[in-house]
Image (spheres, rainbow, N blue to C red):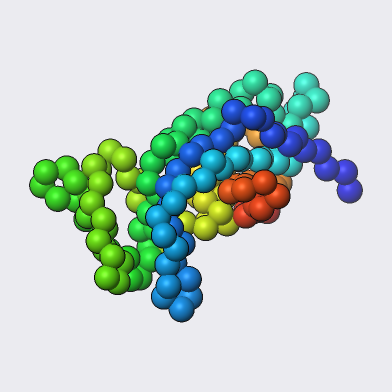
Amino acid sequence: METWGIDISKEYLKFSAAHFLIFPNGEAERLHGHNYRVFVGIDAGLSEHGLVIDFKMIKPVIRALCDKLDEHWLLPGEHPHLQCGLRGDGVMEVRYQDRFYAAPSEDVIVLPINNTSSENLAAWIGRELRSKVEERFPDVDLDRLRVAVEETSGQRGTYTYTR
């Protein structure tokens, strides 16, 4: 069996964001931020032109996902004990245990994940990227998609979709 793939690791595939993790025992980190880097691997059959997918076509798609997250506070919308809601004045209120935060809603992104770990951020990016690849590049028959999100040098969470 033969397989082909491309790996993308560009300096500009990054985003800066604030978050806090909630641990299984209920404790939570303090609100802080990271300069995240994103790495993508795509495995698929070769086109008649000998390409998995054109680098020039896929890099802007990945960058747009990074840009969407950049300079925001990321919240886990599916965490069972974190509550967030939009007030009438455009402020997002966030409550976790005895903590209370308020931020302009345009500064906050509530993601469909249960914690803002690098693993879950990789999964969110990976699922969004897969959807966009299938929509924009219907001739690409994905075999595998890998996304890694690095929060600090040498420390990454990964997500893999395999058909």
